[in-house]
Length: 358
Image (cartoon, rainbow, N blue to C red; front, side, top):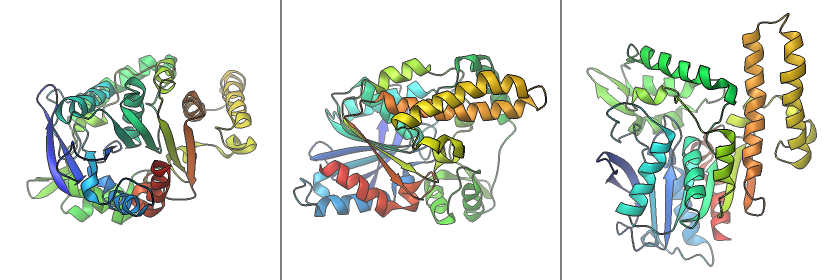
């Protein structure tokens, strides 16, 4: 394992943790790993050693030892040890541009495997759809394609972005010890909690010294919602253009299933044929019949949150089904939360090894 810095097109540096050979061009297996929002490259610290071990012992695999592999885990711009943008504005498309420039111009890789978690899976999806010939295989953990809110939310999306940017100027959190920061990261929120051991791993690259204490290394600008987003139709066009075999790993107690009301599973998984029709029916029933009637008696803000939850399920389901079903494989873990590669690295490694070896 070694550290490497790569330059983007506009001269910023992107840090990375690299595994395998230091001669990037000689590897027979090239894998790009991208972490989730507010995480960093350390999120793969447990997964990658397990994956290399598995691949080197799999019969018929071209990987004999680490010299045959080049696995690069990037810190996305504004995260971990990577440089912050001068304007502190982080647009999804810019992340895609950064990575593609490094892969095509610096590394000069013509083909590679993309592996992403959460935000990283969104970026990998778009790269795979934009440059399908370069992506040999695609591995997505707890995510696919960027989040696309309803078109009617455009006004509130811009408002939230501008108001959040102002409030961040006053938010400079300092932790007295690394353990204090790890405990805070472990708490997360209702759908994104982490075991303390996993939180400590993320803190390896997720903190910077600040006076007598520590603060998050990620740029506060990463917390600001995008002023605008892709439309649903635009995301579908990228996903439908993916040509590589794709593995989507979901966890039953992960981010997406925690957002699914139990009624969603009445006809099986939301990605099955019947489940897909059922989700569409639920969303429109709630939005156009149930919500207008009950809003007379209940706070509309709470109703809007439930509507967004159903939209989230419907949108995620539609993104999954927009990928060619002949190339998409979905694997489920019973438990592991939103970071299964940190909490269940052996199980996730086995899934990925099996997928890459076929």
